[in-house]
Length: 362
Image (cartoon, rainbow, N blue to C red; front, side, top):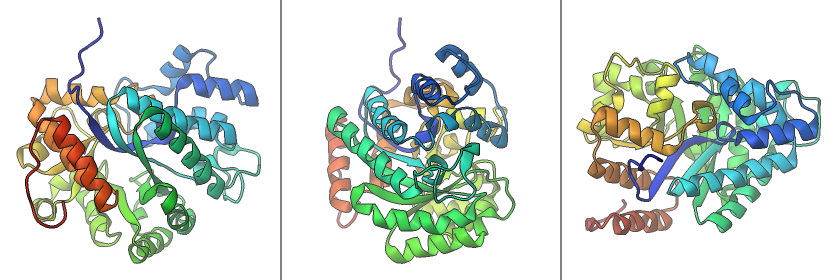
């Protein structure tokens, strides 16, 4: 008997990585087709090698991508297909709006230094990756009825890529790219302030490109402060360790900062010590602005319902809280104001709630 969903109503997801949400069957298919060696021959074997059941460190988690990304990166057909299949996955999870993020450079094999995943040089550039993902997402949106936008990631360990990332955000903003992100290994000391990242985020502010940053997942509250004050982030990826600095946390509460919370991920990456209350409980109790998200469902062997079940069963979350956090997610999305309002109205209607009459912006 299948488990009843924890929240069987329309949902919004703001923090999920495309390259961490690929179907194992698709990885195997392209591994065989392209002659790329993989560590397994069946879906089950592949999932047991890539997947995680117990906590690791964040750097250990990041090594999981080495196993399967060579099967996808540098292949036009594969890049477009994973984007299309991603939308199908989200439709099945009851998601009505999702912002999916990825690094264009990590899927390319041309005009990128160093070429990732030990690939031979090819002819798929980061620019073409963005175009291909966009095509796959738009076809998925058409076929599965999920509204979808994308976020382009800078990588902490490759600041030289970042200036191109912001230029791609600008170039493809009409093709559904809505923001820039800084992702990767947060334990790299001082990486928020590497010159390439600072320049990219300065340009994003200047050009009106929306901004989110992975900060305070395993890094200290100081990394959160850098994201907010130096990178001018509008949302925080994870942000749990903000709670180590009460002054900063209270400031962000007042500013209505949005925390992109990934509960199951935080358990498996060691970002959260299960012997302590999860930061999301504090966010809930303080009526903070946050969302629930899967992060990397392939590696965490999860779906969005995993995160909802976890917070419902282990942390006492209610249907009312799920409604509140999804409405906040919609309000904190990087959609233009008119589309944002339509999304918020859709949720109020689906939840049988009356939208509050308030002047000005949402």
